Length: 155
Image (cartoon, rainbow, N blue to C red):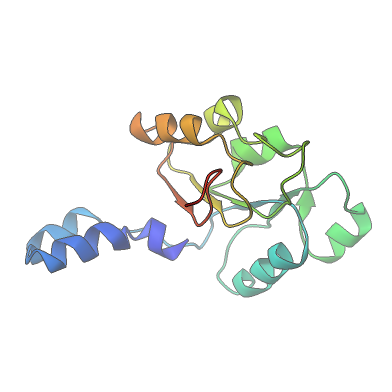
């Protein structure tokens, strides 16, 4: 999340090319007062919430149709429907398993709900995010960025 908001990849490339002065064109934003939305509230999402607890972020949101509302409240998250999570989160972090119900869960319509300054993070499974729709959203500047460590087809 920090790497995305501070444009670390772009800044690293500029430094490697000796373009030190151009780094100022990539100012970052803090995590403070931003909203994290997690899709799936299992062990990894819970660890992420724990890691971010002291960064001054807003109360996290979660979409997980299988989690008990009391358990979610005990974790300090507010359960919401997927559309609300997509619409209001500054970071959407995916942590659900790939099943027939979650395949393509994040598609054109869901990406279209995101704020232009929001980021999508998928460290769960490829296939949950429609990669063509994500590419279009990024190419057209409809979201600020994405970080993926998995793809529908991995080689």
